[in-house]
Length: 112
Length: 516
Image 1 (cartoon, rainbow over the protein chains, first blue to last red):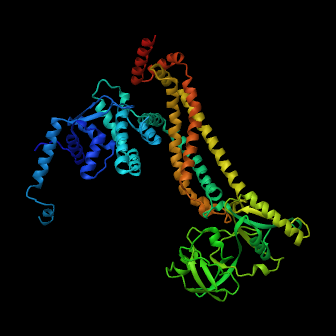
Image 2 (tube, one colour):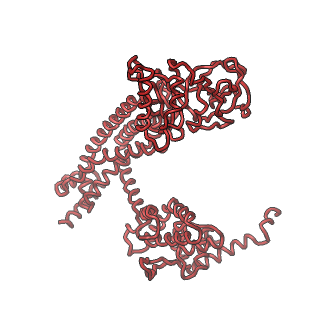
Image 3 (spheres, each protein chain N blue to C red):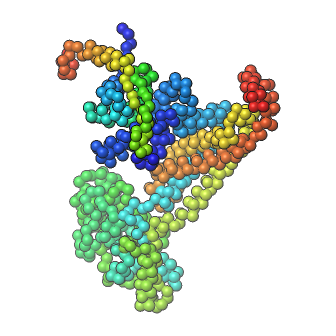
């Protein structure tokens, strides 16, 4: 059995949030997406640390966009999930599903 | 200028790697704005501080370094933060000091002893002289004494009628309480025992702003002649004689043959010292209401200490001016114009007046000791910088600026002082109990002596000053090394030492060739 993508929970969360946000995936937008969906307010630093790690692994990439056309507007960094990142997410999910197979609910764990 | 509060923004700029600084800052600002809009300012501020205090900054710097190392367009400095640069310099200084373990250990131990002694003595000064008394608005509390200079009593106790008149006439004060101390024979709870007792006006606890932790203190009127006998216990006596009985309130105890009802227990940290016209202040294990008929007591019987609270909006000078005027009236009426007056002394000042000079002298002495130790370390560092003249010359030839060399030498003093300060702090914390044990019994407020944030700040400041004093002279010395002149000695010295030295000289030679 190969080692596979080995995405941690935080990495999966952030990659999925970045994918959901799409083209406008800044650190702030990813944080808001996670907060809206599961009620966890991550710090920007933790999001950046994770995204940097994911970039290094090739699961995400980033680019600096032009400054926003407002007074004092600054350049922003946008993140994109790569094909390799999507494959890693699918791999992580399928591994989890294999582990859950035959267990319909969490309560099954207690009665198994 | 971003929309973030100024201090958090400044801290974030310190923590963020240079190459990522603006984009991450922009994100945090955006998040802050969004939080203010959706979740309120309070949440936004809390989230912002959580962001700053997050340990993720260390990981962020590391990940940025890993990621940027693949980008050839970025210089190694791009992932550095001011904090990471400082850490790098600390690491360098530590490496240099490790090369001379004998010197480093000697310096650290010397500084630890010096800083530890200063911290320990300052802890006592802080607890005894500086820390405010643990009562409501302690700066308003004063003791009032009779001044009978013509018979040799510049500080005499006050008589009952005088207290009565002060209550009637003085407008600069909100309350006066009569106090006196003695002992009381306690029976009915185990073995009979003489306990130290304070007898005080019923308003004394209200005047101090102290409440009982169990039951209550005195009620108005409980100090009237004929009122039922009640007692308030100190925490110490409650624990010692009553076994910390939670149902002690309402029990009776026999005091000097009178059945007396326990109405309350005082807080554990209540350590009010009652002053006397002569001798040292003393505490009390039980507090009972003073039932003397003050207005009709003999005028010549000066038997009370008087605790008073200055009214809000009245300063000490105004209060003492009114007391002087009242004293002048009494002088004419009762003391035959002999110069009677009242004297008011702030409670804290009165409490520590005898020990203040001794403690300050001791603090000065240990401060001087540290100064000598620091001077010795600085001299040793100066001698070491003479031995390292080759290294410094190579550094400057390789492009290190004068300020950079000064900074690196200064950091060595900083590391020594930081380690010495940390060890000194630990020494002071563990040595404080022993120091208090050695202090004379009459040291007031010894229970207030403790290590707190002030002590930590003091140790930090002393260590910082020590670092400056230790590092500044060697830093100037090392920076003034004549670069060109030292090349020859540098090259010669290095090539005679080892293979490593020859490589070093080779690098130096190449640099010299390039520079010429």
